[in-house]
Image 1 (cartoon, rainbow, N blue to C red):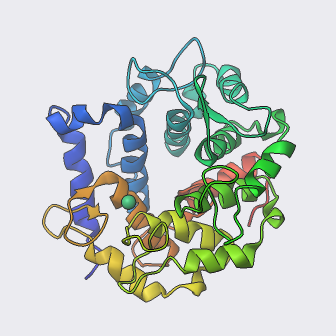
Image 2 (image 1 turned 135 degrees about the vertical axis):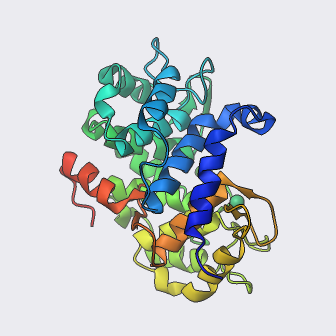
Length: 319
Ligand code: ZN
């Protein structure tokens, strides 16, 4: 099957128009992430102006929490690191970081979630895991404030997420899960400490995620799922080991999960599409070098043209 780029753009446009649908309101708890996924989809498909820029920025700013400096998933909800990173990614993609109401306050929001053991919690109510550590590190990268937090024990915390099997858990001592490759490997790469993990062992566990269908799974014995074409493959890409999987078979698996009528990509062929699997399916295809897509950066999940500017702002040489 071919890449149905025009159909996917139509799918994003239709999502943007269907705000009165019940489906839209049911996803309030994910709306900021959803907007980042939709916007990143348009960038990957090289139509970055598809959604109205001012409308996007108005929504993002409506989710800003003045007392903490963080962002929530939707207007009136509590701020959280997951949505703060998405908000910052959106502002950065739209070249509008100067619209951030108070940069120092947002930096403090992230800093205050740093835990004594090196982890980060997602909000003031606790719960630490590798996703939030990643959220904090990329947020500080976008805010050009990585040097404002001592990451020494965070690097150790991330290193301890790697298990003997080579994979990475949600936190030290937890079972390996494919989704944590992006967060642990990406975070250590940003911090310049990728040498703390055993790369060959990691790449072995990650490449073992490829199933007979060509798709990747998140754990042994589980069904393949298009989103691991991002979570797992990005880890392999940062480790320069994408060739450890059969790229053609994975491309075919992702392309077969497209909906040829309404556009969008599902978790696996013949299932219902959603914007989450659409963006990560396209990002996976981009890592595989599929024609017709902007090149994606495996460390930050932004177009490489945008991440190049981000690294330059931070005086980082990651590539
Ligand atoms: Zn999935």
